[in-house]
Image 1 (cartoon, one colour):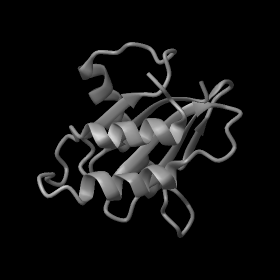
Image 2 (tube, rainbow, N blue to C red):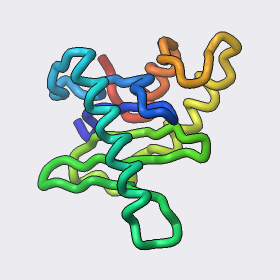
Image 3 (cartoon, one colour):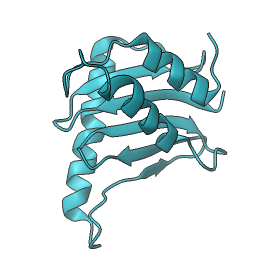
Length: 133
C-alpha cells in the first residue's frame, strides 16, 4: 500500500504509461489519466523557467499531508511520476527507470514517445513496488 500509481510522460508531455499499484488507487477514466500526466508535465516545464537556481531541474517532489509524488526527469525528457504515501523515504524511481531501459527501450518494436503496451514492463514495475494483483 506504499505506492499508489506510476505515470510516465513523453518529452512532449503526452502520457505514455500509467498503472495503479494499489487497490486503493482511485478508478479514473483514460482521459483523466491523460489530463493528469499533461498537467504534471506543464507544471515541471513552468517550474524550470521560474526556478532561481542554476540546475534547472524543476519540480522533483510534491509533498502533501498523506501522499507524495516523486518525479524523475531523464536526460531524454521522459518523466516518471510515482505517487506514494508520505512515509516512503526513498522511492524506487531509479530502479523503475532501469526497468524502462531494459523492457521498453530494448524492445525492437517500441517507437519513442508512443504508449507502452508491454505487459512485461508492467509486471516488473509491480515487482519493484511490491504490488501483486
